[in-house]
Image 1 (tube, one colour):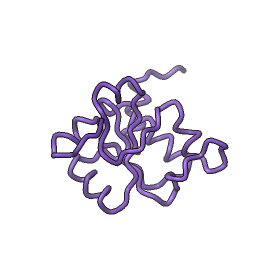
Image 2: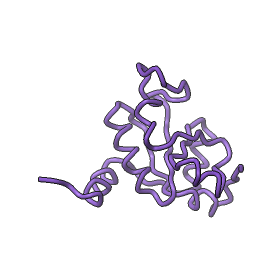
Image 3: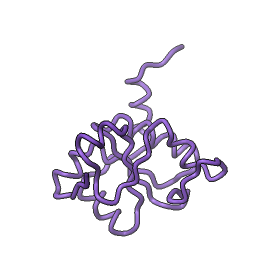
Image 4: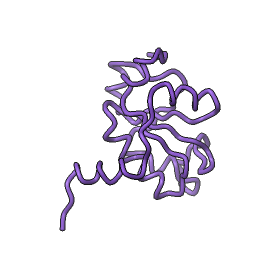
Amino acid sequence: MPVTAKQLIEAANAVVPKISGQEAQDLVAKGALLVDLRDGTEIAATGKAVGALHVPRGLLEFKADPTSPAADKNFSTDKTVILYCASGGRAALAGKLLRDMGYAKVYNLGGLKDWIDVGGKVEK
C-alpha cells in the first residue's frame, strides 16, 4: 500500500526528536554539527545559520556515507547532528534517513526561523 508524504513525515517525527532553537544552540556550542538542508536558492534569499554546513537534501546520503566518493568529513556516526530546513519537514525525513544510516544522535531543529527566534546569527 502506498504511503503519503504526511505519513512519511509522521514516521520520521516518531524517531527524530524535535528540539528548540536554544537547545540547538547549546548543542552546537558543545560541538554538534548543524546542517542546512535547503537548496541554494533558499540560502541565497535568507542566508544560513552561522557555522551551518550546507548540504542540499538530495545529496545528504552521499555526504553522510563515509564510503561514498562524495563523503564529507564533517559527518561521523558518533557526532551529534542537528538538521534544519524551511519548516522542519525535510529535516524530519533527513533525520530518519541518518538514523537508518547508523547515526544515533540526530535532532530536528525545524526551520531557520527557529534558530533566528532565539537570537541565532545568520550569515549571507
